Length: 459
Ligand SMILES: [Fe+2]
Image (cartoon, rainbow, N blue to C red; front, side):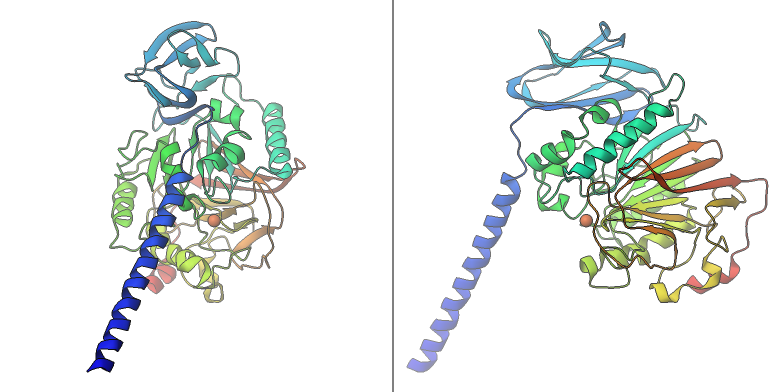
């Protein structure tokens, strides 16, 4: 009787102790996540939620104050002043009723004083109307959140190239895309300031930033405090109802930015449901998808290893790619693997690298100028997959994935141009050299390729 009692008491005590330890761990972890999500210093203005007729400005001040946004067609000629409705240190003001594809100079501060802007460096351009064939240019940064010498050199070389290749009467480029992990190592708000906002201050003041939720961003709540993302369809596309994943339109381009970190990727999950509805509603000629975890890589991560990143690379490939390819995605961008890998035009490859079959390579050789024929949204006509994960640092890996036409162990970023029926990508390193260049051209007048062999395999 007494032995039984002792064992039961011991077990109960151990259970209570274990539960207590788990509780302390969870509270501690929660506290760290909350604590690192705040930043009390100043933050220069950055652009969010663009639409052809509206733009949202965010900035941060050390004092609580009622902000005001001034807009005009010249740096000192304000035609619109938008006050905040309440005082805060974290400011966000949306200007509405704007003209599409138009440059606006701006200043932010209070009704009494300008704190940022009112000069030639603070302006934005509203996006062109949805469906217009206005040429687009974007800079894609991969895992950029590490304030390194290479990061600064690369930024400066991109700026130099943009200066050397100006677009008449247009901003140097239209938007920034980041493939996730925007702030190492923990995605904290101070790390965002040090590793992302300070290095890219000038760009962030002039073009909208579209971020992707990466595993390092998921270590704090700062990502969601900082970014104001179009969960209600503010920038085009179907409302996702979540800031983890979203879509937007600009000109002839539709972009879906997906969450491969915390959201379920399978067909029963809400992200998959939304993605199907969003892609079905898309009428834009060009479609780009962005996801942090790469479906194909042999870089510092390995898409053949199920255990890599708790299976997120494999799940992205198996669950998201069939849907994206069904809806004719042209380019899939990812990060996470800290190097550059760019595929041939491929389709229907949802297994490990050793399951690649010849008919999955739509362009039969590792060319760099690909042609997609058939109606604009004909399914399974081929996709280029690019891992852009080395805009701030580069790691090691075998770089031998068979779908890749180009694999490079170097830092860099991708410059994207869309002009009519042609998309062009250029990978630039910190020396200013373009070490990869590819293009996709659409020719709707030609019949679509018959892909029966490939499609039969995936049914
Ligand atoms: Fe990552």
